[in-house]
Length: 279
View (cartoon, rainbow, N blue to C red):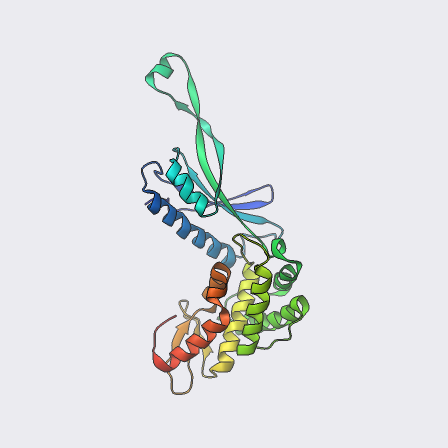
C-alpha cells in the first residue's frame, strides 16, 4: 500500500492540513503512487465537505499534504506535479545516523521530509458571488442529516434564498431550478483554476434542494434512514431507487460539468422506471 491509511489533521497559521504519509516511495512504482495520491485527494475533499468540524471557523483555508521520509525519484516528482501538487523540503525534526564512515568522523545528518502539497480553493477564493452563496448556509443552516425533515426543509429553503441573493436567480425545487443552479455555480467556478471545496453546510443545503427537486419530479419518493441511500426515489409504476444527493453534490465539485446535478436528477427518476439499482 503506497500510503498509510491514517489521515493526520493539523492547523498551522490559519490553514487546516490533511496529511498522509507515503510508506516507501522510493520503491513504489510511479503509477501506483500517483493513483494512490489521486484517490486520497478525493477522500480528503469528501471529508472536508462532509465533516462540519474541519473548517471551523469558516475563515480557515485547507490543503492536503503528502509526506515521504525517503527521497522520491524524478519520475515520482513528475507524476505528483502532474496532479497539481507542489513540493517543499521540510526538516524531519530528528537526527539520523549516517554511514559507518560518517559515524567514525563524528558526524550525523538531519533527516529531510519530501513533502508535496495541494491547496483547495474556498468559495471566497473564486468569486464574491460564490462566497455569498456559500455564506448563507454557513450563517443560517442548522447542520444535521438528510433523514431529518426539518434539515431538508431548511436546506432547500436556504438554497432558494442563496440563489436569489447571490446569483439573482429565482428558483424553486424542480428540474428548472436544478438547471439554473448548475449554471450559476459552474459559471463562477470556471473563473479560477485549481481544486476547490464547498463548506459542509453548503453541500448539505444543496443536497436537500436536489432531493426535494427529485421528489417534485417523482412524488412517490421519500427520505429514509438508509445511510447508503437516504433518498428513496419512486415514480408511479416504478421501482424504488436508493440514492444519496450529498454524494452527487460532491461529485459536482470534483468533476464540474461532467457531473451536473440536473442530469443526475433526470437519470435517477428515469432509473426508477427501469431498474432497482442503487446510484
